[in-house]
Amino acid sequence: MRPRWKLSKTEEARLVAAIRRAEEGHRGEVVVRLERSCHGVEPLARAAQLFEELGMRRTAADTGVLLYVAVADRKAAVYAGQGVHGAAQPGFWQEVVDGLAQGFREGSPVVGLETAIERIGGLLRTAVPGEDARGNELPDVVSQS
Image (cartoon, rainbow, N blue to C red; front, side, top):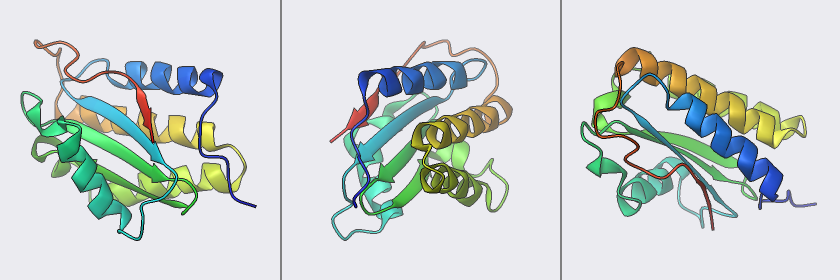
């Protein structure tokens, strides 16, 4: 049986609230993208492509982070802009993906996504602390296609 890959309105609202909480206290931006499949492309390569397509590099200091999930393929990746990527300890991004995957395996994908979003927000508070003078540069939505 294939996993359901579209969020309900309630699930989406929970994740948008998690994104908003994760974006407090720093100058970064968090975007979540769910797709049914990454169409044979490695998830990190697809995340990098979407990072550009979604205009995430245009943040003031390239501090966007994309959490990408190809639900039916059971694959995920995190792609971070130049202003954030190097601030993570080795293995951090994979730990975020592993935690997300655990949530899916346990039948709690929204909890797995919330946890991943919270961890990304924690890193952003350390890597690019302070208030974002430009405000919310990217919409707080869960993009599904």
